[in-house]
Image (cartoon, rainbow, N blue to C red; front, side):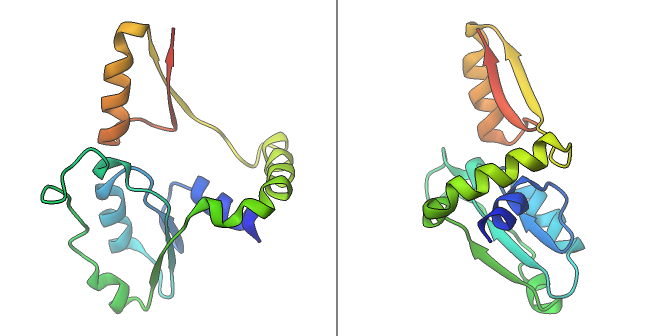
Length: 133
């Protein structure tokens, strides 16, 4: 179910399912703490987007996947476009029930917009990075 995939991407803690949405450090830490048979979803690598190919970094502990019998797979959200409406209904229900909590990292003022972007690219924000104008 696409809703399960989307909810996995909402999770921050890495135990039996994981996602690296912003930070290489989060992925590396998670790899050391994954459970046997874990399935890790990769749905972005924003901390690498502003880097040249020669500057990009990857996790140093991929061997943990072997030791734990885990798998890691890329997730392209547009592959699930036919299920967006169904997922939106289910996620709205979970949000209304308080089972999904949305966090925002708000920077104040237009002059701080570059700083907000830098925080986003460096993985220093918590939740959705916003700039209040």
